[in-house]
Length: 246
Image (cartoon, rainbow, N blue to C red; front, side):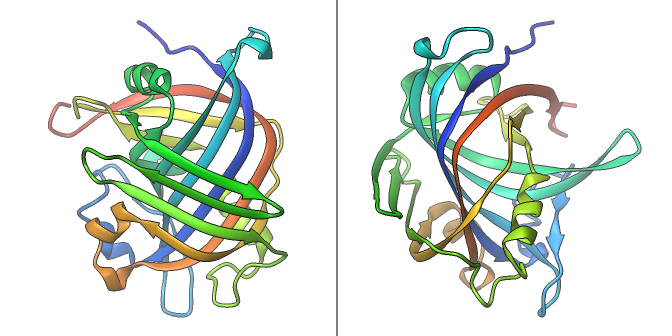
């Protein structure tokens, strides 16, 4: 049986933008296998959805030198989930949509790690400020965020501090994304050499998936986190057949 190779590289920059979502609002979005991974809040438990804007550099097959690696901008719409497997509760993310600036990533990634759409990215960053935008011209899917580095999470965040927000995401390294033909959920694990995040203050954010798939009053901005210069690997996980094809 073919098993996708492990990829090695560096997370040059990763911005994680989080929204609070009532768990019931995700019933029609999540595959049956998954349930929302919730965080207790003043208005009851809330699921965490969001967008991941990540620039990868030196990406290559593990074992090859960094000099042959490639750089790309990527974006993922994601939802924190949990599921039962081998008698234990597992945690990770469901990724209904991935986009990339790299045609190579779109081709190779779609065959191995779930559908990757090729999209246009505009990035401006410097002096602690980040302006990121992604748009897929054909189907209109888009996202954008403008943010600056800060030293604390928003006062109304469901996470009491940066450590709590960091811990939630550190447990979400396994992700599942629909295969191009929709018959499987392809799995991939992000394994980082270290884990360190700092908070961002968001001035403006837009994520078309959450705006169209979930009622407007069901999505509330919560937090944003930044990672820089982290060595990592992408490791394939066993794919899951969807109920229709199982």
